[in-house]
Image 1 (cartoon, rainbow, N blue to C red):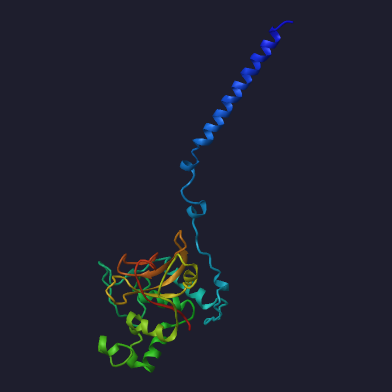
Image 2 (cartoon, rainbow, N blue to C red; image 1 turned 180 degrees about the horizontal axis):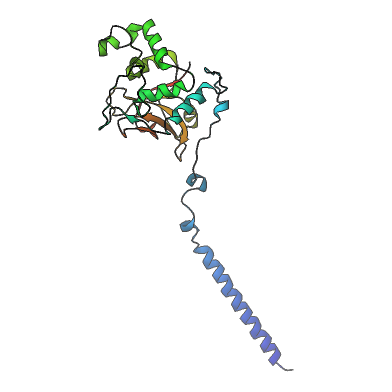
Length: 257
């Protein structure tokens, strides 16, 4: 019997087995020395993408509508604040600005403002005249306001009283819904209590005194932290910025009560 075909068959079988062993070795090598750990992103894709807060201001639980325009007061105040960003007013007290702080009628020219003017202009968009509201409350409760102590006033002055942050802080404490002061962006329940259109008072330089006030915006950081629309000496004009977790919060209100 011719052994050559058998030897040829055996040789081919050995070659096939050898090739299979090599392939198996390559597979095992790739499995053992995978680069998955190195090439997988360190965080989940959901953590890398923006997580903006989207709040339906038409269904936020606010039903008052002072100006009867079909828009609830909270949304109207927010819209009024966002209008202040279209042509940002310079801060009257910022370096290089030569403007008085007292105006007949109260409100400065549109191109100038203090932090309190931004609140008044935003509220006007919702049908609230802060000059009249604050003046009326002062007349009815004069001793609760620091007019005599700080400015030696014996009577109220609607041209300036509502523009002084000390007065505005007392007014909101008396006439608005008082909300939490602790801000924690990592706590969903806490975050939900900071609604666009809310008024927030700040101690910017952390000296114990309230020196700034702004309105929470519907714009947020990538992490969902709501920004604040305000006007302050720094940067010197109306701005929308993330400051809720970066400075001292002195008051948090929703108007009307």
